[in-house]
Length: 621
Ligand code: ATP
Image 1 (cartoon, rainbow, N blue to C red):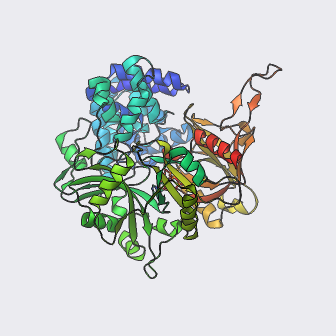
Image 2 (image 1 turned 90 degrees about the vertical axis):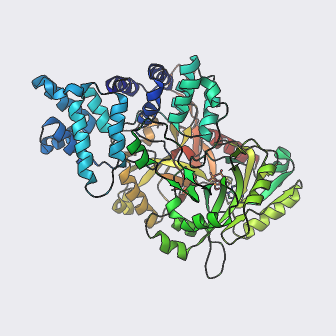
Image 3 (image 1 turned 180 degrees about the horizontal axis):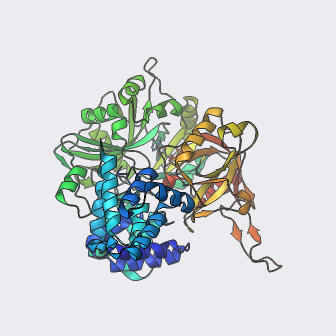
């Protein structure tokens, strides 16, 4: 398929905010695509050239792209810059100048105006993986030459993608819907496709498999060392009695308060799984060149590769894991080197850093408490019971100083759970985790196979809520100096695939936290409210942001408010006013920042369904 054709699809996608229309457009795109290009298309739809878990970013600033556009069109950088300031979108600027060029000088479109998706993809991936000295100029050259060759509409998107400005307003879930539509014209296969995607969260792999082999191809998707599995999540309950009533005899473990790691280990010669995209061998080698013994990869909750941050965990794994291949999970906690005691989360989290890693590792060594085994020696354990997985975990983790198997009690007495819970809380832990003995590991799902029982605070709400910062206001008074007065937060409504609001927060942050929020938000500012934000007019913001900063919020209670859109339903009133509010949305009472959750992405935040369940739970208290 020509890139020009894909660009037409991009334009159609941009023109709608309705999820159903997007799904339809995507499904006809997928039908039209060949299996040798559907993988590339899926990445490009996300504005990327690799799966989300690969840390491959373009590293292109506006300034660099201005130079590339100038080079491609023969317009001065000054003029490109001025037009950019007026238009606010370099993609549109490039398209306009290309149209001018085509009118004045048709050959400027070049003989290669008919570049295919794969040809353009190849250039984009080169730009993305290029690093080191002189790479900025080379990136500009590559893109400048490419933009010169292509038609105006393609230029619009070739410019936006490396700038991370494609933003078509849908998530990977809509792409999964569209794959089902491609096969059968509706959402029938969506949950099955999603299950496979949770085990292999690579859209190119899933799309290509479905295109080539239909649903049969997805029947036996197995985990693979090196490719993270979407992590399972826990439901909430607030007493030992409720837990036993729900899952019966169960395993109770401490809820360690550190950060979750998914460890991938291969003792023998490791080869990276072949990329799903059709790359020239040289690029393939450059990208996926890891072939080594004692391969260890660590993934965080949001599937970020964090291996380089934790060399002590890597060393512990090679020393203590007794298997040729394994994928397992655990919670890493820092210890105080003087007292040997576990450190609170705020201190452990200082280990999440890209620089001075070794120094910090000496200051705050980590211990890993493993609690689940998902894959061992070529065998997937996902559909085995928790008991079986745990038994095998105990077999492969040998005694040592860095890695331990989580403490566990198997019981069916609610009173015992309360005792263990109180003991855990008195030792400064968050509470306990209860695990269903015959529960399978449901990748990416939040269900009652795991239940978290956390200590309760003054308010009615026992758990915190993970939200994204959607925008902020400049503010008045003291906070003017921070440039940020209050900020709007939201959860995700999976039914309408939109971020919906639950609070605007203007108090409860320390000066340091306000400053941190301001600094971080500068990276994610955008000109307009994104299409997938559902915000009441009363909650508008001075500055809108991409949903990138995840903040954990504690509140006293979930209440109802007409100005918040989480779960709000609009409907006709008796007077016939179609927009009148019927049911107010969920809102947080006395919300305050608990902590920044750098280990989470927008895909890991609390969903509207969860807020609803927390609201119900709170009513029972
Ligand atoms: P929270 O914010 O409460 O930590 P979360 O949203 O990060 O929750 P959940 O899946 O809801 O994630 O809660 C489980 C988390 O608790 C896991 O992600 C893991 O990091 C942590 N944890 C600590 N101890 C255990 C344990 N023994 N078993 C499983 N998870 C544990």
